[in-house]
Length: 138
Image 1 (cartoon, rainbow, N blue to C red):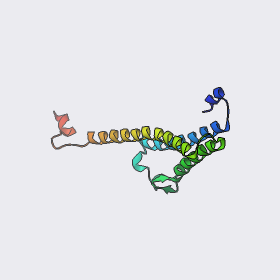
Image 2: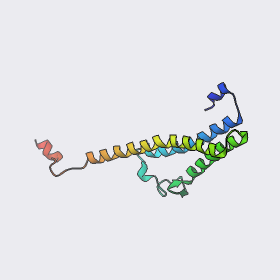
Image 3: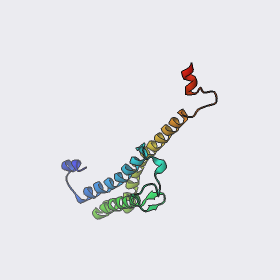
Image 4: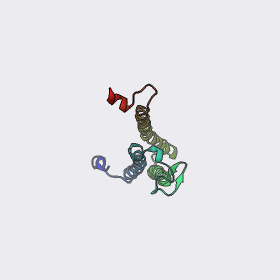
């Protein structure tokens, strides 16, 4: 995460941006663990099923809300401290990064959901399908 700073130089603004974007990444990363985990899945991603998240807001664990808010606040504060950009510009830049993370996350959710639907459809017997005993009899 800090490798680019070795080339462009350290600044508090860049450090704050790095920490803000890492906080944003951590939220998406954690959510994708649920999406991609075949033993957990998105169907069980809700209050009461995820015991380590005690409080939920708007269908998401409270730490996700806190992580997103922290990311936004630190990112905006970094720009205000230098005075180079307005608050609206910083919020807009953060929203673009958020959307950049959101798009592949939604694509992963969709791909995982469609794969699960295909797996379920593959195991649904039809009326004209032969049973395993009929197949063995010939």
